[in-house]
Figure 1: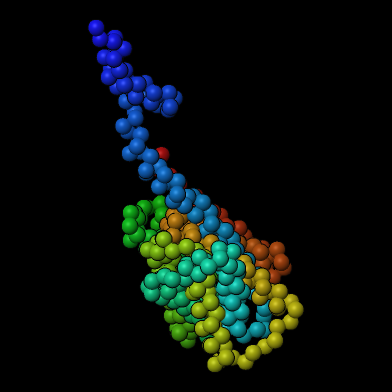
Figure 2: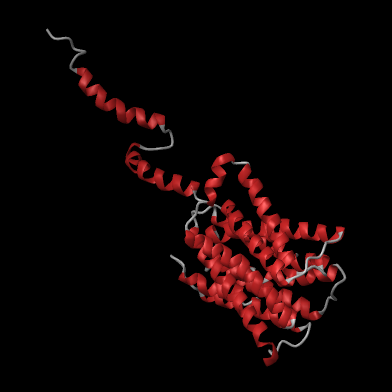
Length: 335
């Protein structure tokens, strides 16, 4: 007579697996197990990917810091422009180098990037500031600011060319409202009708807008490059600024107040801001960033008013309202 337990073993084993699986995953059902594995990989990948919202907020931080640029620049008046450029980007490069140093030898690997990335980085940082300083030297600052601040609108328009990008009517409407707000702020300070005598400066200001918007949009092509790598273009920009300063300017020893101003500029609007913007343009909502960037000149004007360098006016309030409306329109989601 055969043992009654022996034939029971083959039957018990198949039943044990489906019964044990639900106990191991109390929230799952046996039928859901085959589907769990395919979902696990996309979910893990999504968790490792930087948050789109957090990256966009990093861009807002950069915009707020850029809003303080004009006020901080008043502390370095009297210093040659290329000397300021070289000094502030040198500070930004040192800030980035300190971040790389914390990662040890592996941090230097962040600088080994494709030539295209270097060309975009150095061209964007140095090219924009060199054109901007030149424009200010040959054209009225109000008109220069109006023309150069076309870059947020251009970002909104160019972002449609990104993979998966789609230009929506709310983006265009928000960008135009923001542009109207900026124009209102700057028009309150003087005429904004271009003059033929200042065409070289206007052309340089337009170059600023085209260069910075292109730089910001092209960053999405290098989404895998860490923000720490920006220390390389910052150092290159500082070196180019120094070369231009030595060739075309006479060095001026900064006072204690000017030195503090250079430090504040290098750490804030030039240092942290550019690293935050680099992360934001790679992983955030580029079209929304373009619209929100209109807040920088309005914030700049508000800070100048608080510091006593400008007077508050109805035009300023209207500009703030237009920029705020533009941001709300552009970031509104369809119901």
